[in-house]
Length: 377
Image (tube, rainbow, N blue to C red; front, side, top):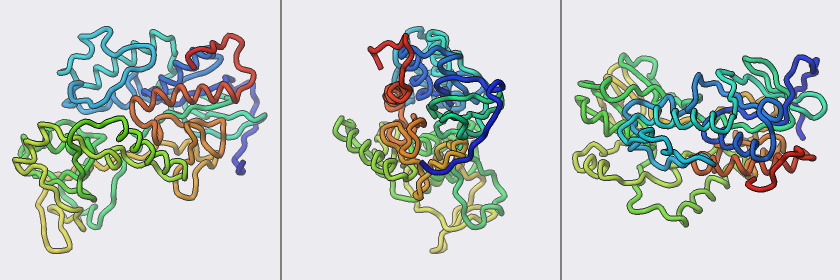
């Protein structure tokens, strides 16, 4: 095990639990649910720390025009269907409201007692083989940690020459306010992922002009996405995380599903993609071949990176820049489990990862609690 920073502290000032769960999105709630099923009690056996002010994970920050009917592949959390109390899941409602209400109901139903808003600043090596989880609400000592912090807090902003000279507005998809803010504007949308295409289609309805720019030619997927294709996509992502490389975006592996709205937009020329520009000017963007596009706004739909900086004191990163993971377990430290990372960065993957992480943690923390239920985990 590599050298890590160690902190010796008066343990009387620290709350002791078996497991700390960092993050209360889909992956974190799944992990907390399976901890409860395994016999760990909230508050003593485990604690869930979430930096957001209310339930909903990253969904609570989604733009208002992303209605529940537009959400692709939202899977139920374990033990409770999304829609049992609906009205809740009406397709015209904002996804932030639908999923936020569902997560809140889930936390109450299983008495998960999520502590929020709590910002975890660092996880360090403590005494006696325990971990110290430092946060804005104090310090917890734990025997294992489930990290479910996702990516929403780390939007990726590419850097291009002249970016600081642009006189218009630049914003990232994490702050996308909905299409109305772009009415009558000339907008450059950068990014070939699902969010970028959704933004582009909405903005094109109200903008004076839109330009779509991507680093690589987009790949559109026709027809159903079968089980075999899904396994192949998972295998590609898994190869990267096992090698300690940062996970790829889902779209880079699966392609963009072609919808009727996309077909119409393609016929109208909205999806006529340009290669990445070379420079940003005060009034727009330009390419090395002399092409220029005037713009009032540049929208960077360029994705996110894993929010794992608080794990830095444990020195888990590989030379490739990522954390090598086997299943959910960090290769360099079996106490650390990453869910919602790599192959589990999807709603169905997050559910499975929560269960898998708890299974491995139970095996690690021997003996398991006397009240642990053997079934279901």
